[in-house]
Length: 353
Image (cartoon, rainbow, N blue to C red; front, side, top):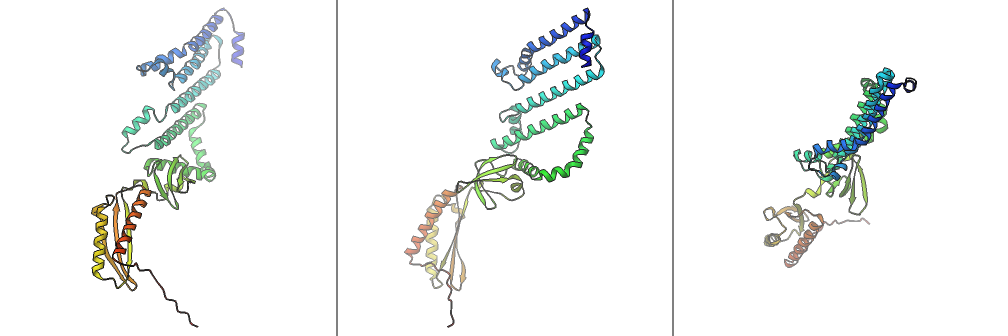
């Protein structure tokens, strides 16, 4: 306020001219700021059209930079004539740097999108495939980091002792951890899921008692749609600390069947049964022929066991069930042809009268 009063009190012929020059400087930079922003962006994006450059995320921040720079430079220009105090100039400089820092941070954060060149470069350099959902998480993490850096710069510019801030954070970490430990765990879990990429959106996973298709992933939680069409929201801290089965990554599904036959079944029938089941599987195009195993595995007091095991060249679970059903039906037909009845566990309970 005192500096503004000094401007009014010290007005004279020369000062008035300088004041007019300062106002003109502010007006010129304000009017020409779009032109300067266009020229600067054109130098870096010379193949872009005028419309594309104006829609660039850096176009508006550059305009703002020249507008506030005009005010700042005008004040510095007027300092000698109007005897602005060092404290006032220092305050204006701090405000100028803080506004520039926030403007740059905001423009950088807005420029980070899933289609930006920086993200495309990360995808190209990565040794693993990064899908759209993982890209979305990556974009969020980068934006958070940009704002964190900007906040620290602003604190430093204000004059706040960053070492004291870090110490204060250390002293207050217990309170923060107790109040938001679940949130922090989930954020860290989300970052770990992004880095490890055990599954992606659209894939079918099994976690604990839950099983379903991943619909969305955020830094806090993962949402899956179960087989009964309900939505389950699972905190990332749980997923990152436990085992997850990605059923969509299955290239082959395991078929296993145990046939319990009567103990008095003749060996000729057993061999014939094994041969017919083997031929049945051999003719099925979905069966991995090099994995067919049919063995007489067990002899027990109540019967014998034939084990049929093979892999099916399918990954979809519903398709696997359809093929499994078809194989089971055909095996029952073979048992009927051979007049073999399956044996079931039976128990005799004697009741004393």
